[in-house]
Length: 485
Image (tube, rainbow, N blue to C red; front, side, top):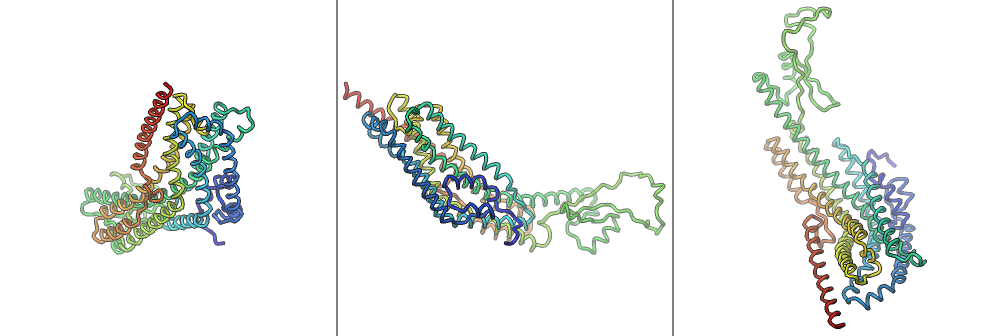
């Protein structure tokens, strides 16, 4: 296999992949991943994921059956609405986990292609002297895994210790109540890390364009200052080799190009002969300077000045890379579209139901067995913060990635404005049309976009439905009281 100049970001996914593989969430081959850092399909891994899915489903139903006494009491004492909500939401978490696992099985061949395309983009960015720092992925993944484990253990242990009768051996099944949400968290951590990697690549392209504008502005400022100091001897930013010799003779200066810094430096040189052909100056008796020594004059270098074909090639390369990253964003959205939709539905319903059951608990009403955490306001706060955190973070990250992809067109136009060149304007306008047709927006199966507007709408919907549920509950309790009286 040929040597790869750029590492894949999967190098830093090792801990996350190992955890997902051990829990039966992802079907990809473990040995291939550890050896080559690639995602390869595996029939054995697929069988393990299906087996894990069946085992968790069986024990999850045993858990529900073991606490069925509480649910039968709920049906007899509470309204039909409360009972139906409890039954429906009891299985939505399990359905979310199954959706994640089926999506992993279905997309196992495509996800490897996604990361290989990302590695090729990194290689092309390296050709443009842009290096992507991927060292922080491991740290971010460990932080998110740690938060997920901490929240799951806190909710599980606190609920088990305070609200479950742990003297019965069947209570040990309560541990399976956290499996669906933990599996979902691991899957969404994988999605978030990949999405953030795409956002980082948009950012470095935009930063490179901004640096081109900044360096050109520095060059224009230097030319203005030089013109004000020496009106008769303004150095043109682009001069030919024939004029360079004349410039050296007139100014006793030499142009030294530093390939390390990428800037043209003008440094004074000491000629061995004076203007009249005199001999060497004695090093033992240096002349005392009667005036200020010549200052080191550094000429800023601008990539927007020079051969227009080179500028066009560089900008075109950036736009092609931008288009490729947008295509990867669309591919990523397609792979995780169904799991994201189910997660958002789960977050909306669970957030509303948990608050509703918290209200029921304050009124000393019976609530579904798997929602007994609503009896504690502290556990409810932790649980809702954990669930809402996943949804909000994914929406925010998708929104920021979309904005970063659209900012490239603005950065490109800044280059045209800074250069103030008609030919460059035409190039920028042509490339802007390409960028306009290759934007990336993230959605949940096309039902709604993942942006701040959706988050605002969901917040309003939760409030509205919670008020409606409480009103129905009040009406049902008033009706029961009237019958009893």
